[in-house]
Amino acid sequence: MTGSALYRKVAEDIKAAIAAGTYPANTKLPSESELAERYSVSRGTIRQAFAALRADGVIASRRGARRIVVGGPRVQSFGELLSFSRWARAMGEVPAGRVMTLERRPATPAEAERLALPDGAPVYYLVRVRLLSDRPVMIERAVYPDRVGVLVAGLDLARDSITERLEELGIVFTDAEHVIDAVPATAEDARWLGVRSGVPLLRERRCTTDRAGQPVEWSDDRYLGSATAFSIRNSVAVNALSRTPTAADLYSRRPPPLAVIILTGRGPAARR
Image (cartoon, rainbow, N blue to C red; front, side, top):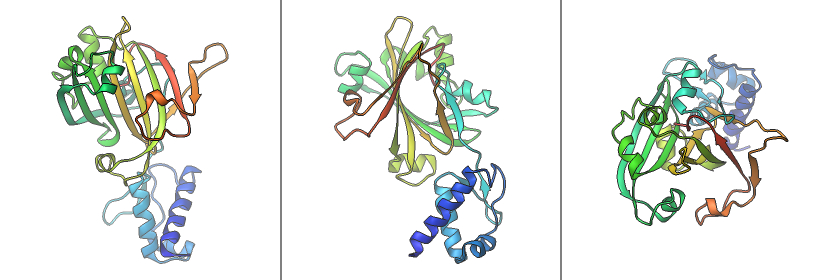
């Protein structure tokens, strides 16, 4: 077995042990020397395995200290529409945002279609990295029609929940359609989330409307799979969930994934 295959095998084995609860969240992993002896490999191979696990967001480390298992994924329910900030506070976390881009520009054809706007109508485009207690867990790329975006631009986007503040200003996010799939992290995603390029991310694309049924937001949110999981509850009586192999109208010209999950939601707020 090559050196590359060796460290990957060790990393996958440790990851499986973490998932099985052998190494609970916030506990220290065995030392390099202990693991090297256990797997009959060099300490250099163990260090490579640790580097891969750290890049995947599975462990954290400080110089001179043992590696710490990062807490398991935080579960978000789609049983109701809930803002990112409210969800974070409910778990005892501190929500925050880091604005990467905020600009007013003409809508692209896809954005205009999603927001029911004329071609080239002005929109506000926001890119924000969302944090849970200072840990980056999600990148949101949101587009707002001009009447909503001008209000968003006036908020403290490092701390404010867009949903909650807009609600105070009379714009209530009432209904949403969510499309959930997995995509590899781009170089930009990886840099902002502190992971390797190509790491799988959970992507939620969402179109949200107000009480009058007017689109108020079109968003592409990408979550660290190691930090967040989604839960969906449905029944034979009420089933807002569907699965499709193509959903061609929701994609660019690149080939679509094998399957996506589409669901609709109704509630007091959207996920912001």
